[in-house]
Image (cartoon, rainbow, N blue to C red; front, side):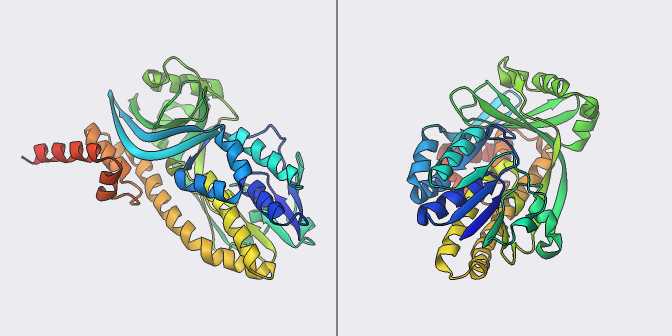
Length: 378
């Protein structure tokens, strides 16, 4: 098959790896508008389940990625002077740029062509290919070009967020909540190598506006947030990588493909970063599409099977991510709770974890919570 992949993110690169590994005769070209050392953001996070899938489908790229993992097994929830630790949550962090470089090297070693700094203004130019893949991110031009056919549904959420890095190491998936000058700020942070952590700050529009971020430079925003999270950053600065205040875009598409054009990853669907699933979902999209292409005799039948199998899984995940997103949009409403109750509410926010599931993960935490509730009741 002749395949054109627009976008050199995780989903496009991993699909190329799987297809070239299965059949070296596939003619695959990845068109990436950025350079080989360009990326937005800092670290990405994986669950155990996703890591097992990566190992099973391509052990070589998994082994390279695994050498760069930063691992942890707990969630830390910081509110005021209290830190509540909840165990039984195994994750791995990785620098986004390093992951993309590992996947790029693997794809090229298998014979895929990657054309960096190449902008495809109109995917119609590739329609003579057997398959055209739009893996070009949340602001996908492929999705925009075929709006009538794919029927996207995109909503802009009210919270503002900004993605920083820091040399302060967070040895857990850490969710930090700070009240500052009448506003409420939440930080999502985790280490992604031995030296660095991701530090995403989120706040409601009321907080963002009152602080005056609209008129601040990037450096001024960093300085302000360093004051907000002074006790958490340990004297370390916030580091920028194209860092800017943006709104989360919730992306859905009624149709996932049009003739021989299909979307993957954030071009197809987004899930709020509070459940850390964007990269996971992108890679699993690639696996699902690869499997469908192996099972069906034609591209059209494969894209239909891919949608039929994958869409219910994504719908379920997006619903959980939506519940989490809404919780963070209303974090201000929970700040009056004591730390244990606050942590409990936070852990249950997506409705994918219930009381008994949380007990299995960390019986000590649930015992403390139940004891506190009994005390309050009596």
